[in-house]
Image 1 (cartoon, protein in one colour):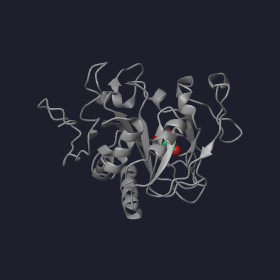
Image 2: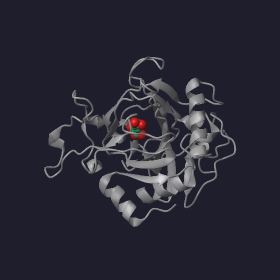
Image 3: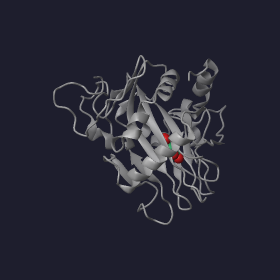
Length: 291
Ligand SMILES: O=C(O)CCC(=O)C(=O)O
């Protein structure tokens, strides 16, 4: 699947784009089943984190958003997903790069009836160890994400408005609308909220400065999805505050962010996933991300 110039132009103007189906229903179901083993702690490997970012415990009866960071370290199916050639090709086209690496992946699973909200935010300010801010995220629904079960909401054109208050936009008490610092918004712009339903197996991209969030899930259906945050080959390690992935960085400040935990998934064409991956990096000096 190659994007049209009109799709690329829309993404660059608006800051998000649903590109349609990238997985069959069966493929999406298989990933959803794998996700449940990662959350249950029964997968082959270990993710970087599995935690409730909206409240206290994973088992709480409300405000549960189960965040998994680097699902791919826990499960080979999600590792293969990083390299899905259609998704990688489109990410390259949207960024305008020939080399693509994975910054990290992320799941925010909202369980039925007790799924909590993800407050309005921008991604890049939450990633204070990488520059510049031109990553894109590929968010793939593993079951229908609907208005009822807390699909993401986006604010068109907001990625052109710069970093906002450290990335946190704020949420009004009236429910789930953004509460931004209006002085940071250009005079001729307005904050418009677009609910983005994404069907099972479809992929929606968003820019790392686009304002987005998602309300609670009071419905009877869970909302499983996987986001992979893709960076172009020129992204550098430039630390200013800490981040969970920093312990996996083995380059010096100012250098390109490459390495065992930041795999190259496109290099002027599709890259085959290595057959095996182990949490321990090889010690022969070879950079396993680039072969
Ligand atoms: O899944 C969601 O509702 C939020 C995900 C998100 O913030 C992201 O992928 O950047």
